[in-house]
Length: 411
Image (cartoon, rainbow, N blue to C red; front, top):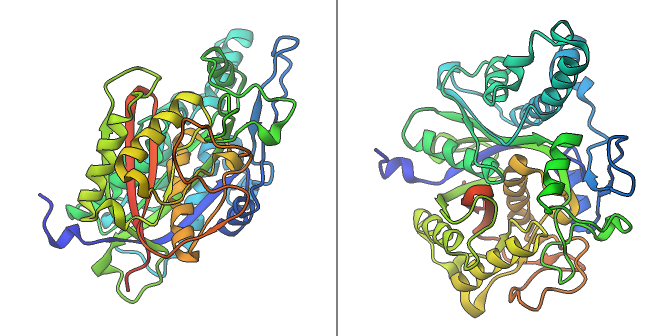
């Protein structure tokens, strides 16, 4: 049962990010406010001649700064990114409760993509002897949450959330509920994915979901643009440290989680409901959970994938929610690419930074807004906004929707 005491705003005490656009929150913020693209051509000899795609790869990530030589050999890319981002977030916290009162919630899409491809190749080319004995414990979806529990000595709930591209936001939402129901006193929550492998990218290419603007990588991922033609796959991780507001009195805070909601379109395996009904219902429920009305929202950090159907469905939901008074809307994916399960968590952190700085970054690559989209999309330069509540929206395959209502720090 959720009591009124536990429905108070949840404090965000720390945040860590790892993305192609930066490995600290400040680096990421600089890239976003500059409207910088990180897309590049994906190189792989297995791609047929004349076939190519784009990715946003975190070239500057230094796993060795966080992992021992043994860990560097054993952990895959997603696990390494998660360890690093979570460590950065925890380093910002002055004190932690007893290990039994600490929980981990990790949103994942396909966190073992690199391991799965490597070990399947080993099996098919070298036989059973060539496979790693750590294959199964590494490819289990819960492997990242388990690793973080072990790594940071979190002995409370260890939860894995997999809701496609809504996973990172849904993980933060679940972390809020663990605090509200007194299942934990502190929660490490976020998301991670690194899907820059031939097999995964080939699968998305077969879905015709990815941008074909390989001749202009800087214009490939451009949410809400009239000439967008698909997303660019990125990689990344983001984690936040959550605590009940009353337990965080006097402690430094990055912001607050005021409310959240999750819904399903129940419409299609990969396409969103065209009228945005599931997303709209999710936004309304999240606002109700935060005890707010649409007019109190200062800006929206949209899911904004740069695909034709998703952007239009999301725009329809926002237009129906706000009417003619829609606040400024942005999307980070023009800069970071689509990080699948990590996206919602990264975007939540960016939303908190926007609230703190009273500044909304522009959508990178956006030249002209799709005439079918009637939103106040931020382009060309950052937009000044008053500090106040904001929406961070995430939507995934299968109609998974997760919306966070975030706010400034409450002392």
